[in-house]
Image (cartoon, rainbow over all chains, first blue to last red; front, top):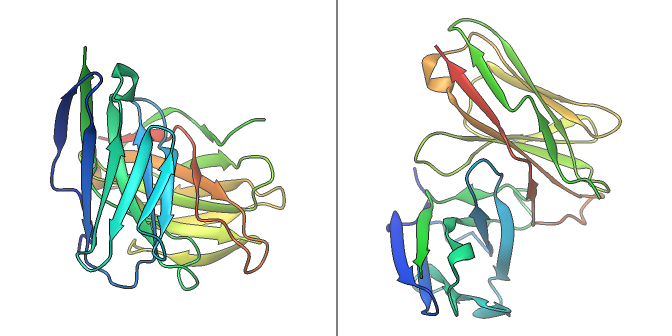
Length: 114
Length: 116
């Protein structure tokens, strides 16, 4: 049962434009959300996170938005750069009860072209 | 500061064999989690070790077992390998210190296991 869903397997964006990656979840107990970036032959790298008490968190070019009522979050990358081309995973956790266990989506392949 | 390291990088085994994968956590981390990433899928949680004990487990059969050593490094063992065990196995480390634990897990590069 996929509790975290990334319904777009791929996204192609021109350099300098905004990239928007989407993620939906079904478990209302999730209260902490993370985005990871993965290059080929490397492990996932932590990018940005957000707690359920917030609806937005920003770090440089990366902003994550959380809509709890819709059980939806998104990652915005502005401006997009060719080096951002990677697979992006959305992950969720339940604080307190699962001790940091992460539930991942299937990932979205982002390609940023010049 | 060394990050999470895993060995070996690649491994080819035959059905029915047993395999051991190894992981050294990031300096300062005391908790190790193992994930399986099949082709085209996201990482799936196998289990987590803290204070040399399995603290929680995902939906994986008993053929998957692990161990954590006093220096916080960890091993993942898989017995009676099946073709479906072919995947990238990822180790992630974090710190717990009792109830004060982090949610940002740091991943190693993974071990690519192929079962033929």
